[in-house]
Image (cartoon, rainbow, N blue to C red; front, side, top):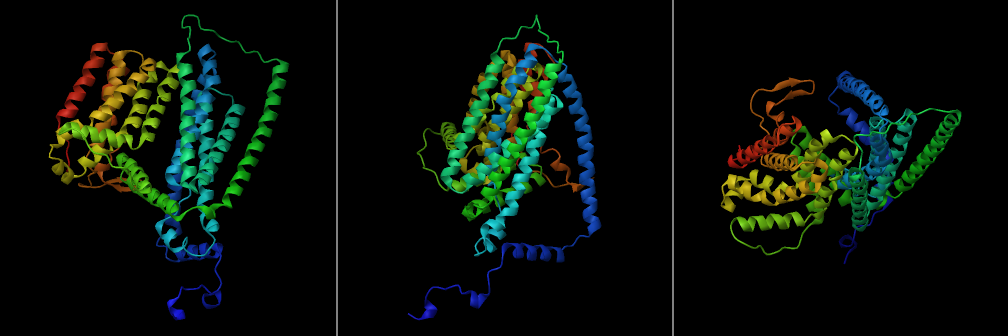
Length: 513
């Protein structure tokens, strides 16, 4: 065998020295700038509009938060003190579990397919190529942690130093969780165990929420506490301030150390997981541009099944509608994590009830239930978006919508029954369950967004008018079912109006064009 038929050997003498990742990024940056088709002033106008909008929203939202903080700080009842002591046990595990799940769904380190094909396959150091994306993830999580921590503690009436302390510590905890997701992204086994940790954290958030909701609260004899700041207490506040500075400094140092250490192990990330995250972000950007909320779930589900590859097939049972119900039940069981997250969202109505906001419990339970049940209707969404599939099944689309909603309706009934102690009356629980199932079925069976008709001018450019109705689909029926509960009507109307909505929802054939 001649030398030409053997394997190709890389010789730097023939191709030159391997360039550094810094020089490659600099060359790509210069190339993009040379081919830019927008002037500096055009870019400045967009940046100015975004900054001005953020400042206006921040000023308005900051004023509202300050007003709510002052009102909450004036509450000295026993329920307010219980909420302040139990609230961190609910919020912190919930934020950590959400961070782990969201980042592992994205990557967290991601790159486009072009980057994965042209750069990650080269002998250039992969850690240096992925480090900018890694830093962006860490910075974004830190900013979100600071904002979320400050908002949550401000809304429960915490003093200013406690708000700063919570913001820094929550941001540090979320950054550490982000570092853990990068470590988990390196192997499938680590990812599996990290997701199980997220499930445990979600369970840890549910337990104190239920305990807080079930604690007895005397309504007639409300206890008030008069706060008199003595010299010793003032000295204690100063000592707490010093401890806060020390604790914050330690938390920041630990986060920076973990982030720097993990940045040196980015070369262990596989190309498949990195490119899959880039494709997911591109799909999410396309779904967000069309304001189609259902498409966001489809993109995430598509990435999950592509990474899973295959599942074990099972023989179906029954005939006609019973066969479809059985297959839908089997399909939901193939992704049990969704059920775990769905029942983990029971923490929302119990937390609101435990906080003493009894009026807001039905709407909080309805929104949490909507988020919990909507992912279970992917089969109905696929059927409604595929005319050929409906014809192959041999069913009318109206009948198919009823059959494919049986299993999600059963989950909705079970979820509402578990949330019933927090909601209160049986009629309100029925209204919440009716709003959840009708809203989720309407959103899953909605037709694609329409681009017909004249465009509407907006600060973001010309927008088709059909896009504006996309985010409201499903939530409109949810609010109609909850209207008699929010308006404090009699139990008869609380039951009759949702029943009429359910009957009308499943009697009308969904539109497909």
